[in-house]
Amino acid sequence: MSALFNEFEEKLIPAMDGFSALCADELGAEESTVFDWSLLIPVDFEGAIELPIPSSYSSTTTVRSAQRMLPVARCLAAVLDLPDDVPVYCDNLQLTEYFMDRAEAEPGEVTRTRRWRDDLGTAFYVAMHLRAAEHSIRLNCPMFYT
Image (cartoon, rainbow, N blue to C red):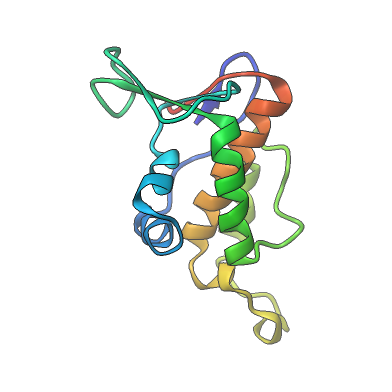
């Protein structure tokens, strides 16, 4: 994932199955589609705009609103009880490294396990969408999958 003119880079390494299941469980079908995008922009509008322009993963480009995605991503972050130390500024794989480094439990962590630890891949995608929306709004810049 990248931002135009401003850095935000993460590697989409984990499987998305857990994230998709979390969205299906916690959000209605309509709300979970807020995460289906190839271009995220800091403009408030409902739904998606489909452009007949190829994107990295499709023959079209799906445009979504960062303002609409942000509260939904915050809701999922609260459901997972994401820790406070998840990186806020993600210009060079900070989220990828954060979650990869937590693949091994730290000593004493068993007593303070949170739901986010059950599936680090799911937690990664929740954090990535949350930070992407925040980044887009904060810097007033579009984000796109590449």
